[in-house]
Image 1 (tube, rainbow, N blue to C red):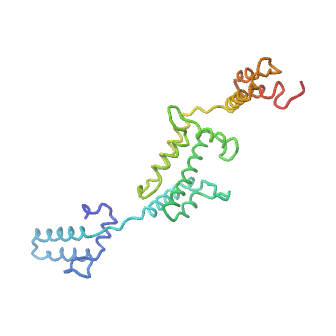
Image 2: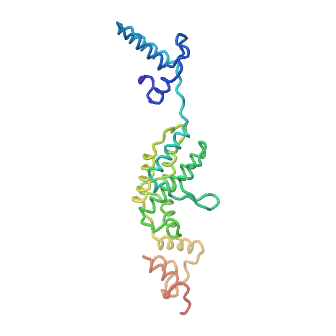
Image 3: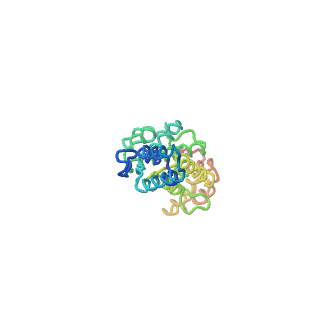
Length: 268
């Protein structure tokens, strides 16, 4: 039986199935095999008995069709079991379309078909990605504007040597591990490991520009496109472009943008 059915569940189903041999009508394969074994109990011809067992088993197995596993049910059960065993992940929050939040465990519980399970998996994966970014970037939270900005910058940037942005790399990893008919028995632990590894790699190999650097670049681009860069900087002499080009840190940016007394000062 093992040579015919790799899964123990299929072996059990075969044993419990009704015999297709008219000689044994109304009996299960288990009952027939027991009869064959018992037939050789007295003065047995071992060769004949074993040959009968093999012939019967092979013939019946060739006609037996194991039940096809439902990949949606299998993957949902696997994912649910993983979230139950890893309660911290199961309690991660995701935002629904109406603006409210719910746990990833609740999202998975509501999955009823292949599409909704794939959407649930995506929600789980995104929650794990956000949680992993918070940990690796040492962010105090995942909801404040500052934290969201930092995570957005990481996702939009390219890691060293990468041809696409980190968000596309992560999307590819999530897609490759999405439960589907082609992936009927998702190994959830391996999938989660792949996702976390991709986040860790993105963090380790991406050089994020500081806020002052981004502001400097944006302002220089504006000065160039608006032809305002040649205006004289009142506090430093020279052009506005030269002033902004000289910014090297946060304090320098604040001074360049607002003047000696900071942004919004007009007392000179």
